[in-house]
Length: 417
Image (cartoon, rainbow, N blue to C red):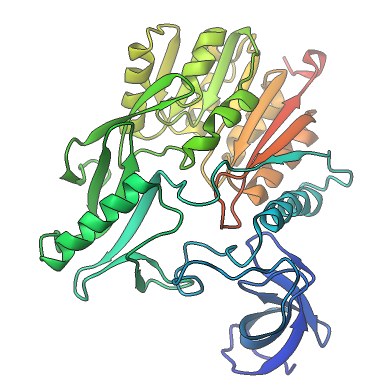
């Protein structure tokens, strides 16, 4: 394979055999001493691939022909697979998907966190491999009248009439939006539509490219809010709220993250609309919850009030700022549990530093990104924490994404005063 300059586009064809799946979902192969990353591959595939670009010492390629399929490769059932950027694991049997996700987590913990002996852990399979997604964002091209998801590695809209991973309620909503699109009834200024399925109705919002955070999205259908019941608790939210997308797995996730732990005080950072806050408030005498999004903060307060829980203080703040302000105050004194559920970017470095220094004896870290999880675990372990147990949850079947929950402990005697 010839050398190429950084990001140089190429059309070279060559053969590779895929060794394993890497974090990010790409297959790893080697050619002429160079690592080759191949999208939509399966471990064991023998492929003819096209070199797309080279970045440093790594080449990126796409499949031209499957010369010899791996035993665990299956025929993707979705007609949009390979063009739509939404799913990248449909070529793998479900058992192979689960194994790949375990290895992705293990790879990040070894390579990024520096954990040589990664603890054994299980992955909880999704009850439904298809039609599970209860939240969605559909991209809209008003000029060409296209509605669906971005194509892989682009901002072109892949027009999708039927999505194999959508919950039935959202598939019905997508069909309604597509019909309104054909009739010219959707707002031209909309860039995308967000939707969330509740117990009885779906909340859908149209969002324009220039919308500021202090303005509201355009509500397309029905009420701007809906209610979702999870594990016996009710949560009010809207289409713009962050909420886990796989409702079928949420009871198991909550049980592992919160379980039957009891105590005097708990802190939850990045609380959203209160998915973990409500069960924490039933188990602890006092709970401090922090969320940066104003709407989510209000929903969390409403959800706690509706549950009859008055022992929780929900504060709107950037997590890093809140931790800095409260590290020597009452909130951090005698805390039994700290629960972290950050976005994909992970926990702010400044917050991790404070937590490692004055944190509680127990941390539960809920992560949707193994790489940033490993980055943050490395800092916490350096600060005296150790991994007590961990488990992965397949919240996103047919994709490389995986949810991981890590329970960490730190002896109280090692806490700084």
